Picture 1: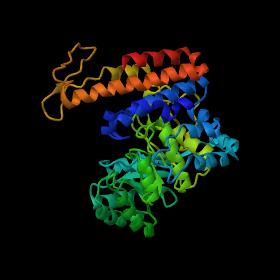
Picture 2: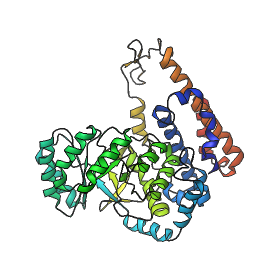
Picture 3: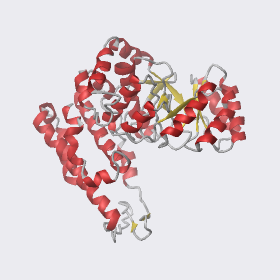
Picture 4: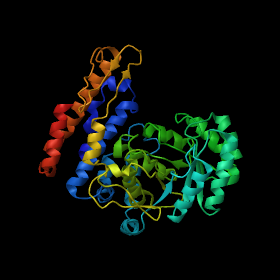
Length: 426
């Protein structure tokens, strides 16, 4: 796993990239995309699903994948190694448990804003019949309506089921405290994203105010990097860590957050949903339980029931639990027909932020032409140019490092061709 260490990718950390971040935004998201694909390929080459592939690695190899820059004040390499070594005890039993029972999940599909009462009742009833006992409700549009909806859902699911609420960054700090306090009667386990995802001290104030009510704060799906997670944990600003498989810099950075969360004894309850997030994050949470936390108390993973049909290895939910994947890889391969659909998707117009430039992409079925006028000028053109350059550098570094350092991968013809191709097309 040496090539996954950040030092092998340091050429990508150019001055231009730093100006866009550092370690956030489009560069970080793109880094996650590339490295997630590499992890997928490696696990496939070894014939194991990703969580299993990670779990059989020596703790020292796992630690070598993590970038400890800027977080050693809370987690050193030695501490991370100690956590992983101690978790070796009972690892086989936990793995067998996951294969048999799966990892606890909660559903977000029953209570979106805008649903009628009849929809809420029907969806909750169907979910209960399917074994769901953990439900999340979207809130924040109207206080009185939130109170009414939450009362309805609490009545539907009963006092023994777990209820969470999610505001999607709706409020300022004082408003969040006031609003959620009014919802305390339905006994939510947490309020998710109550305010700006960048406001660490605001989250800390909300956490402190809601603690006497028994309501925790959950956030992290929009958290840019491990440094922000470090500060959230240091400030006691969250009681539930919500990692995202594509927001952070791939598996590598998520490993750092899992280990920091363990040190602070804060449970990890990942964000999922979207297109493929459930498929990806199941591997991270299985690894967390088997190889890091060894604890299921107050731990669950989000599940949203849509768009799984686009993947060759969609998640399997059984009795409201994520069942470990059976196919090798990181579960991120899309069906060919789905990939073709998105490949031919047309952006009719993309207006430059200054309002001067318009980018029209060609639709390969209709033959519409792409207008390139001024696209590569000024800020937008500069961004595209160094994005292409940075990816080329990164992929080439990985490619040549693998050829030199990882003989088994030179035997993987598919992997060889993919990296070789990427190094030229980027």
